[in-house]
Image (cartoon, rainbow, N blue to C red; front, side):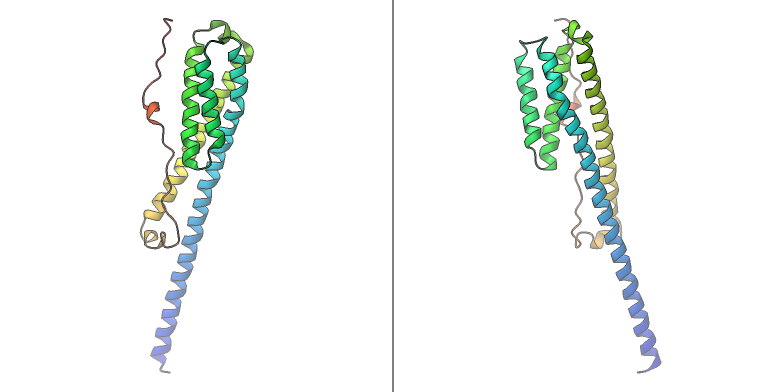
Length: 190
């Protein structure tokens, strides 16, 4: 075999090896980013569970003061049941938004009960719930940052050329529900 053919074959093998190593590295990077998104979603779920566990205690404390506000308690129970039965990320997000909406209505109604607002058990539970909401907001933000990094990565050249062939699709961001776009109405005149 002529020397020129051997050099050409060697160069081609080297190029193929470099492309292969590059593809393996890109694949492993995308797998890591995808797993980071799943791990971040798990952190969101931990905080949603914490809120889920606090709700019955908060509701029982409030029920003692405001027995006639049964619609609020029904909405909270329904929202909590929807969250418990949610299996997909989309269902969990929708149910979580339902819970947030029901809890917001509850806290607005609480404004009409000064003796409840002064109750130490209620105050402690409310503070824990507020802390949970803050943690949920932080974890959602981190989830969206991980999704943004991943989505940007699979859309960049040259990764976009092979990302879909390797099974990587863009991930969905967590978005606020429509009702979150409007500030809640608080009426202190009742």
